[in-house]
Image (cartoon, rainbow, N blue to C red; front, top):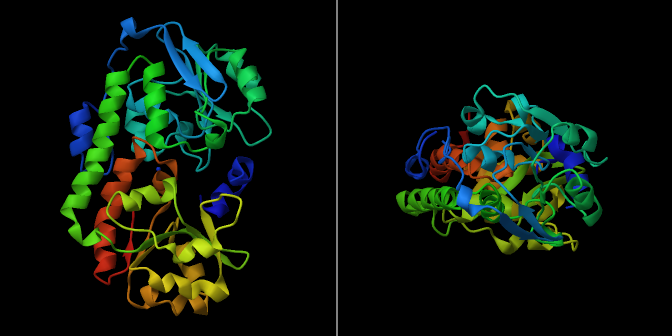
Length: 347
């Protein structure tokens, strides 16, 4: 995640409306949830979901859902369910809901909770009288899981190594089952994967090209690039490859972020296209103040994409609703960049 807006969150982690057919075929800027308004399968309950701390039993269809993690509201909303509480990650979006999910939220006004590393707002959560707490992307420990479970059945991450940002489809499938919407969530996941496949097929020029996704600025004399994982899947699913030339700059702590010192920035010359997670024109202007940046071959050749803040957020959210938005915004920009015209994504 980009450090300027997400630095606090990252330190905590220790480490973007009708049927599923519409979702898979969607080419507009806003994705639509596949199952809005659809009822849960009452025969599915009780549902048992296994996770890192054992298993959670959801005895009946939940109607008061609290999202205690950073991104799970997207899946809940995509399944046509309005949570009574959501957690603010970053971006100061209305009711912690970004543009790609606002249509699904409608006029609802869920309670906005905070989880900044000082702990969950358990009193506020309890006051909402939830019958399900979703915390698959909340950094749960066994202690915090037990605390939340004392309030209501709590859905946790699959294992300790995925306390934050477990693969989006794994989270979605688990949430869908807990809501009694297994078939609906499967359709959502299939729709997103099909949209990626369709975009890749429509752009064979992407196949095998080397792409590097970087944060929006230089920090402490380094460029922050993504070597592997959720923050590069949106590129590899389109046919791009992430060059292993940046592997040498990945720390030994298992992070997928490569911190490339400016004196080594020429390693980026291996890329056919650089995607910068910028949030506004000021970010690009700051990059251009560095001579070593201006000397890069992709910069000189125009093989660049600059995002806006919402598109960067959609990449970082990596959800069933944000990924279609990423595809719609990024695909034409990547085409321009590969042709030698630096592309700037706007809302």
